[in-house]
Every structure is written in structure tokens, then in C-alpha cells.
Image (tube, rainbow, N blue to C red; front, side, top):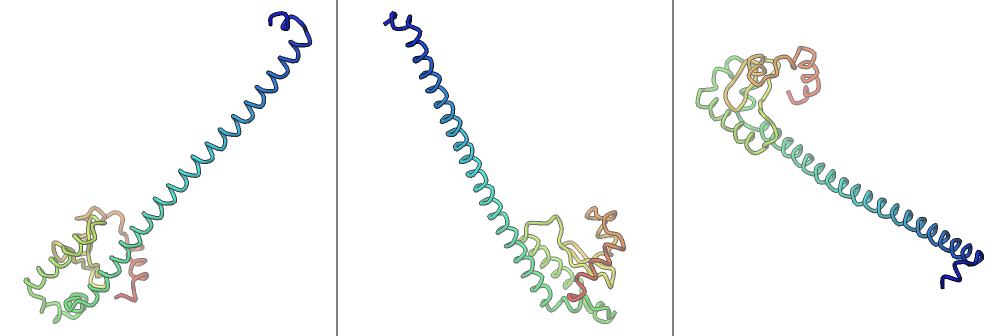
Length: 166
């Protein structure tokens, strides 16, 4: 067998076939590697899409829940009294009714579990009602750490956005 390797023709032929086989192996290996990478990327993208879809569904459900709670609050008997600018109606809200209103907001807060605070803002009266008490707006915002974030311009934008609900 060693005598075949001594002949230049056989050596050239052997080296040529080896180089061709090696080149083909490299090409097929790189193609296979690219396909594996593409498949992994596709699986990761599908997983991300699936996670995003799930997250989107959860957020959508929470917003629907918030909307339903808003509708329930708007139809509550005490809501008209609380948002009224009439001093007579405001005076008719007893301490027990205020406590019940705060407890109802506490219940909604517990149901939602998405916010640090939940409150009914009454910009026309500069008042906020949350799960603890009835507050002046500024005092409420400072109690939750938003005194610097809510300025007159932001408040006007909120009032304008939700004017139909007032």
C-alpha cells in the first residue's frame, strides 16, 4: 500500500478526493449549522410571540376588569352623592357611609391587584376618595408620592380625557 503513495498520480488523486470530500463536508456542515440556528431562532421567536400573546391577554383582561369596576362604581348609589357639587348632598354623606365607600374601594383594590393605589378622583371638587379616606387632591397625590408628577397641565389633560364620565 505504501508503494501506491509513492506514485505522484495516486497521491494527487488521493489528495484531490480528500480535498473534495472535505470541502463537501464543510459545505454540508455549514448548511446544517445554519438550519439548526434558523430553527432555534424560529422556536425562540414563537416562544416570544406566545409569551407576548399571553401577556397581551392578561393585560386586556385586567383592562376589561378595570372597565367593569368603573361601570360598577359609576352606577353605585353613593357615587352621585360623592361627585355632586351640592353642599346639601355632600353633607348628607355620613361617617358610616364614607367608611363603607372606602371599604368598597378597598374591595376593588384587592380584586384588581395591579396598582399601588386606587382612587376616585373628583377634579371639579379637588377631592380624591381612596380605600383609606376622603382626601384633598394635593394631599392624596403627596401621600402616594405623585405630588411632583401631577401638575395643572396633567390634571387638565385627565379632566379633558374623562370629561364624559364626569
